[in-house]
Length: 339
Image (cartoon, rainbow, N blue to C red; front, side, top):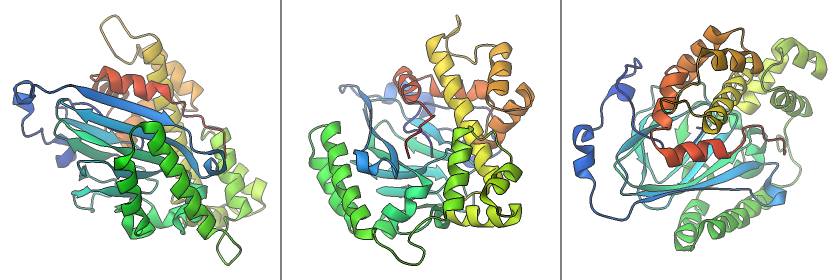
């Protein structure tokens, strides 16, 4: 899931009852806020150099005294690993609609093509780790494909190290110290899982295809990828899906969407419209569609509805109701070239 804590939703229907259900105290949100210091922190950090082939970034967040909110966890090219610091993570809806809502002290989620729905009642804190799919074997001991479309407690995969991590993260005094603790423990995991053995590595052809898609921002045909590997399209699709969790075509779709979303946020942050946050007008969306490899603006809008559950203008309005969250979203570039 891309992103972290978000902002209140508008009331347009998404077709999913969990997404459309209003917050229990929405009509009384202002009155429900207590007189306590407002805390709204978001901090992004890079992992230690040896980890960067496995981990893209860390994001720490802490909110207190803010309005109850809901946030869409959107498809992205990264697996999601979350360690909460205080309140559990409340999942109202998972990418897999068959998975029931629940609360998580830690969460590990695979790549997906549908949004999740996260909620809080005015306070939340934790660290989200963006895991590269090709690094799943090294850190998790299994291919990312085994987590495709689902969310599980991280303990189910990482075991007792999660309790150690949460205890040490809670005791740390600041975000850099917490990120340093993550470096230590994730490096320890990678060292413990290193070594030759059946299935211990990713097939070079799959790794090459994934990197080619990333470099192209998803704008590459499966036939070209297959030709580059020397495999048939069917064999590449099968091996790629088993390792990554998505087919090459679906992965390309998620990458295009993630790039479009990031560029849209960056564009808005640089030049907000006179009436407040908005999509910047049809001409901007049309240009963005061409830049990101969509046929036209209508194609971009359809993909947003399919992958985010709403059109671009609605998503922007939701996320930018919280100025701090908006600045944080614009802060990190989607195009991450370090593997």
